[in-house]
Length: 456
Ligand code: FAD
Image (cartoon, rainbow, N blue to C red):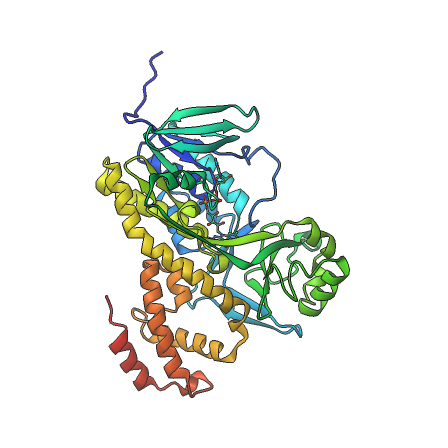
């Protein structure tokens, strides 16, 4: 038999079949490329689940748009739970709801990381030219000779594979990024937060019912730290405690089951009865670190590119890491469309267009931690948030609240940050001497918006 292959170019090698690598495989396959993906872990569709990073995550417009481009949005949305806003749980037990947006479609979605990743791998594998190699860890890349080293995790056997184009989608501790250090003139910084995170579970109630309202993200903001909870389709919630590593109230100070229970029952009293074996789970579950990684350039000549967390790991407080990585795929696809098959140009333009935007979301994500854990209970913040929604109603093309620009629109992150800073100062000015939105001085609002937020 004659094997007919539609592929004329050599395969593109991807390192890492996480969220970004597996979606990127679909994008590249759709353009007719052969793709070989090396993933250090076993195939998650058949292997028992290990303790991964974050069980569920928030997906929003940028991520959904990328899925739509490759025709996967409907399949993925079918397994997602819409979240219309935040439910704030105060220490005394009172709750209040703050909507994320104001149009019906302005919601974010809670999705299971594992189910999403599995669906993307399966979708990529449907293309004839895509192959996944599981249990294969990249241990290094020889830049000048164009070889990638891959070790079989079961046999410890290492082989070298020649590469034409290699894309490192191997996450925040990327081995491909490490290899780029030897290229010279490669900038890199990593900044760890003094805070880490721990996941805990609220199981479903009788008959798979939710024990808290299901279409909202729950936050227990406590100033220096916070607990959050996102729903899962089986009726459970995954809670995440974001908490200092050291200090008076910290992972290191909560050293015994008694201290954990005492702390939780004072700070998160309404959550405690919902989390069985709280102290046991607290010590059994790992404590994760939170890091921002910035580096540049992301490419080496025409052969290597970094994407997703490998290029730009950010802290999770804007729910954007994956969305940003998916948006990377959208942009790379556009660059291929425009400059293919000149890979050096594709990689260079991709980096140039993307860098300031990922730096902007990295910074917004850091700031949002303070907003979520502290400002959401501050009356001045709430007044400004309400005023922001009213300004958006009145000037829908000019004034869009920051959360909405990031989560419900696709304008570049750097532009969102620039406009958000101007909007913040307008809101501060308008709200400085009022206590309710009825008192907004609309002629001043008109003037400030026209002067300072000119439509591009
Ligand atoms: P990863 O998902 O880390 O995938 C990398 C893959 O590469 C993995 O499969 C890994 O096994 C493999 N790999 C690593 N090294 C090698 C190697 N040497 N050889 C071969 N394979 C290798 N983002 C959101 O958009 N919304 C959220 O709500 C959200 N919540 C989060 C909550 C937490 C607590 C954390 C930590 C992150 C959160 N994120 C969120 C960010 C999101 O998880 C990441 O941005 C996203 O996973 C990045 O995808 P990636 O494919 O680049 O990297």
